Each structure stands twice: as C-alpha cells, then as structure tokens.
Length: 109
Length: 98
View 1 (cartoon, each protein chain N blue to C red):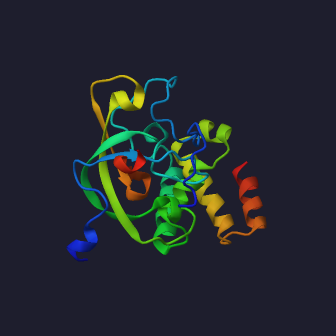
View 2 (view 1 turned 120 degrees about the vertical axis):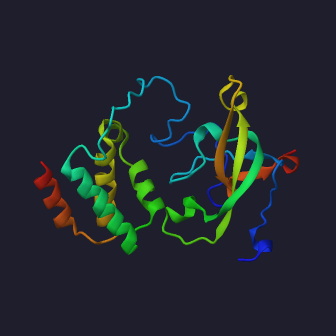
C-alpha cells in the first residue's frame, strides 16, 4: 500500500484527539436541539444533497474537515467545520468558481 | 455475494498488529491504535477503504473487523478493553511480523 510507511512516531491530524489529555470536560446540554441556528440546518441539508448527488463522497467530506488549518479547526463549531468542508469541496470539484467563492467570503463577513 | 467472498484474511480470535502509519489524508485508524497488538472479535462486513475513497478513488470493498485491544496496551494503564472497527489493510498477522 502506497501510504504504508512507518515514519517513527505516529503523528496525525488535528481531528485525531482520542487519548489526548488537556481538553475541558464534556458538558452535554439538557434536551439539546438538533440545530442551534437555521444556518446549521441549511448546511446539514446542503451536505446531504451534495453527497446524494455524488458531488463528493463521505470520506472526501471527512478529509476536507480534517485538513482545515489547525487554528481554524480548533476555533470552529461543529457545523462551522461542515460549512468549511462543503465550501472547500465545491471549489475543488469545480462547482463554484473562484469568483463565486470570493463572493461567499464577502457575504459571510 | 457468496460466502467465499466474505471470508477475509483473519478469523475471530486471531492476534493482529495494526500498521504504523501517518497518512496525509483521511484514515479510520486512530493514532492511539497504531502499532498496537489486538485480537479479532468478528467480521463486521466489507467496505471500501476510506483512505482511498477520501482521495476520490473507488476501491473494492474489503473486510472490516472489530478488533479488541487491552486499554493497557494502548494507553499504558486501565483494566478495560477498547474495540475498534478496522479495515483489513490496517492489520498484519502477528506471526508474520516476527
């Protein structure tokens, strides 16, 4: 397998935090809503539609989240990461042009 | 799909070692379970390797196993076990490692 090469210490991407110490305790919200804002539901729906249409697959989506810049990844909420991944993939797959992506950034502030 | 196609390299009870890898793409082999010895619990089915699929490839499905590790072997302490679903490509037979 091409990627099977031992390089000493097994490092990994920022998402791979299993067994890592130093994070605050997880405090589950009581009766947590599925979405905390309308835009989150929109991102969820758009991602489902793009997966269903085969614009990208689920592993490409996960990969796009995992290669976020480390500082952005740590600062982002769950659905902010989804939005980042969807936007990245739409650019990479040629669905959105560079101009359209630049327009999104302006619109998003 | 016939039963012969469902059989993988490993059977329940087999001792296996996970590969040590640091891929620059998505993988389902978490860092804490790399280069670790465990025991195959059961075949979970056959699925395409996410590492390849995340790079836009369309690999054939391969066996995925539930593999049980002693927490002590992964984290240096603990009396419990940790079971992870792992693709066959992540596993090597221990007797072949020696």
